[in-house]
Amino acid sequence: MSKPTIDDVAALAGVARTTVSRVLNHQPNVREEVRDKVMRAVQMLGYRVNLQARHLAGRKAMRLALVHASDFDSEPNSYFSSALELGATRASARIGAQLITHVVNQNDPGAAAEVIASASDDQCDGIILTPPFADDIELLRALETMQCRVVAIAAGPASDGVVATLGIDDRQAGYDIGAHLLAMGHRRFAFIKGLQGHLSAETRFDGFVQALHDAGIGADTIVLERGNFTFRSGLDCAQRLLDGTQPITALVCANDDMAAGALLAAHKAGLQIPQQIAITGFDDTPVSEIVWPPLTTIHQPLRQMGARAVELLAELIGGAQQDVRREVLDHSLVVRDSSGAG
Image 1 (cartoon, rainbow, N blue to C red):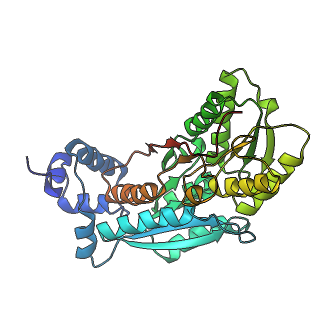
Image 2: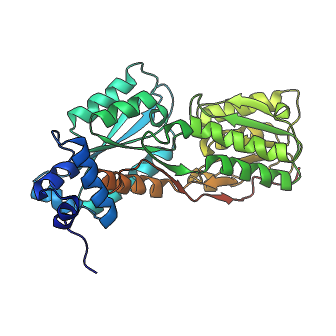
Image 3: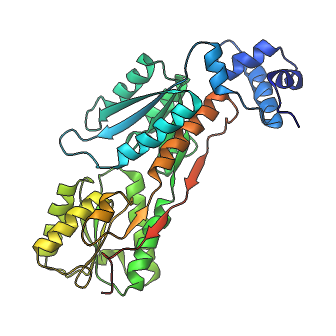
């Protein structure tokens, strides 16, 4: 069966070919009822725009932006941003799109305005946001109002239904870590959280708490610290936990960089890992394999997430996928030498 054409969409919708083109290119001055008829025809036929051909014909490459959030006062996450960018860059090259990257200070009160200005100045057709921008509902709505399609990576539940979101099941991943440590015999836990407001990381903690709850262990028994996803914060938080009066046998960290810092703190304290304390991370970054002992962690397919975000944006820009949705990618528990029996 041949693929449906723009003429097929026009015939089914009962409009001119040029009207279909105007709808798919998000041009103004199209009545809402006409726009709805065209999009229903698109969905019924399964029509997909040849994005690369469309932009080449107009002598305009599709412009996409990837926005990284950063704390300019501390070292960056060693791998999260670069892995997403690598996946997004490769996917953009495959479809003939231009990818522009921006690093925005998440602590700047004008950060959201900077993101909006960048999208406007660069004339972006679509934008990929990472936390905490992925959880800023006002920012998401403002970009959509500008006819700039949005994909939010690793966003919390509040962003669902506002824009397309993409990530893993963070709650289940946190549960998997908790279930593993419980199976290894641990009952005295500490947890180093990430930045306040990073909702996907908070959801990891919720899943971990649920695993303990199912085993009859209350959340009030977990000793908590909060870091900022950096190696230094993991080191500092772990030192405070290890110097505390409450004994722990398992230390869970919201990402691998903090877990690497926690490993150093345990080594400096003369503790044997995992015989005296187990330490786990999250993300399965390269550092998780080269530290000693190698980290038990959750594999998050970051490069795949970056690539899929570009592909999903292309679908949204092309008009073939209009319903906002959440795509959940597979994660896995990677058990290495840093976790063991309590």
